[in-house]
Amino acid sequence: MKTKLSPVSCLFGLRLLSPTCALSAVLMLAALAVPNRAAANPFGLATMDPNSQTVNVGTLSSFEVIYAVHSYATYGLELTIGFDPSLIKIDSVTTGASSPFTNVSTDTINNIGGTFTYDATGSTVLNDTFVVATVDFTPLADGTSPLNFEVINEDIAGYGPFGAENDVDGSVKVVGSAPDVSPTFALLGGALLALAALRRRLACV
Image (cartoon, rainbow, N blue to C red):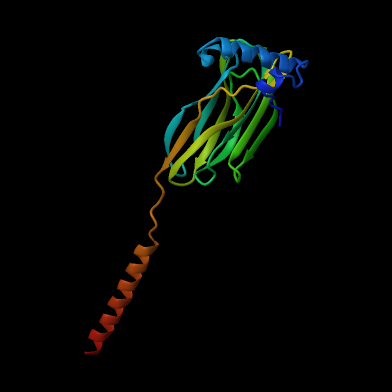
């Protein structure tokens, strides 16, 4: 996994001479100077489309991962998204048709631990919004699964990977599990046995 550096540690003397730390210190000072930090964030924004949806058990569904590159020239992204593996199963993650990052180095799905990681590089872009990837999944059981951005590393030209931490998480609500009919069949079986016994008694009278 790519290393994420702390702006605070860089600002106060740890690895201060590295280009990544220099960038981090500049960003931190800029954020302190602007009351609305989000408005001053030069990193991109990761979202999902749809951000939330309701799906039926067993029906193949999907969502798109969207990334908006802001004022830093960016040539790649690493994303890790967490989900509830008891409620949904990720089937595939494919590169978006509009994505400039088509050189995929990591496309790993963990349907036991409940995460998937997608890492790709490509053309350098800035001030652009595109579909990074389309995620196909199968709903398994009733409930609401979070879709949380756990890692966002933005590959910045001249610096390399940097933790962006600018995102809007999503969710999937799953409905429509088949009811448990085993008690009903048990009762029906018992009733049929009782009826058969009654018929035998009547036949003997």
